[in-house]
Image (cartoon, rainbow, N blue to C red; front, side, top):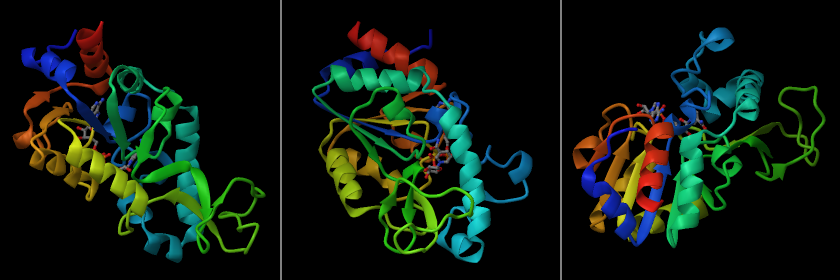
Length: 244
Ligand code: NAD
């Protein structure tokens, strides 16, 4: 049983509006590698930060598509862990809870979370690189496959480094962060902007900030409570102790 700061349970029980922002750390216990860990096997020669860009796709669409196909395979085989499940439970327990994720793996939805604001899209969807429409059915074979409507190459429906977040998603996340009184930052290095700005929008509104992460991050000095450890252990303990 992980040790929880004594006043954290009261803070969670008494909170009106709660936001949780998750990063790739919450899916690590489901076997989905973080970017750094993704540099293994076939792909160890490539820097993921240089594959997840529009420039890389323009230069070598096949390489980028194949890399995403490999990651899609990992994600499809993954199952949510107790951390994802605890956040789904929190959604059912709290009257005003917003889950925002930087992850593209769909594991929150698989765990039962109904409303998930996906800042960076979803790796399991593809869209036309020209028309931006999501394409469900395409003929396998070519990599990347052509859009059935216009023939332009399909791409994963994710936000690459250097691209803007979808406007509506960005607005929903920003509004929720700016209006909450408790913000949980879970499994994120707090380095990738604009997601990393969300806890600061919450702090400006006077919210309390909780960081759940085995390691220190640039957000740590601003946190009201820091809980060091794995999300898959801390979150179920926290939700269980606060509400059962
Ligand atoms: P990051 O890789 O920069 O940081 C991961 C953080 O998780 C680290 O701070 C690490 O200490 C922490 N962590 C590791 N194991 C943990 C655990 N068991 N419990 C709690 N925390 C743990 O990830 P990021 O902050 O999400 O930002 C990087 C970008 O990578 C994001 O834009 C995201 O879209 C993308 N990404 C997503 C996935 C995914 O969908 N699962 C995977 C790889 C990368």
